[in-house]
Image (cartoon, rainbow, N blue to C red; front, side):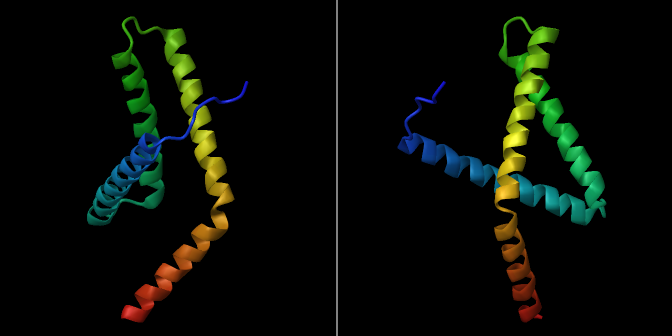
Amino acid sequence: MADDHQTTSDDFEFDDEQEAHVEEIRNIVLDYVEDNDVPEATAIVALIELAVSMNMGAYVGSVEKPSVSGLKMEIERFGKEIDAILRDAKKNAEGFIEDYKSAIEDEDGED
């Protein structure tokens, strides 16, 4: 089944807004991790658990009669969304490494 969705300016505005939220949340989390000496592995697991919990709560809060089967379906859908994010990260791995190395070089140049 083909996706009949046409890209509109609203899609780009949502993407821009989404990216702005992601960046702000990233900054808040990174500041917290740094200020509280939280190990990265701990922060990563905590964020995954938080994302799943928030998604479950969003499902329960968004339907008139939440059900176990409906929640399980939502968790499955959310898992597919996470899989898509991971696939995209794999596709962009080379660029991520290049950007990371460049940022480190820029930091070293400022010292």
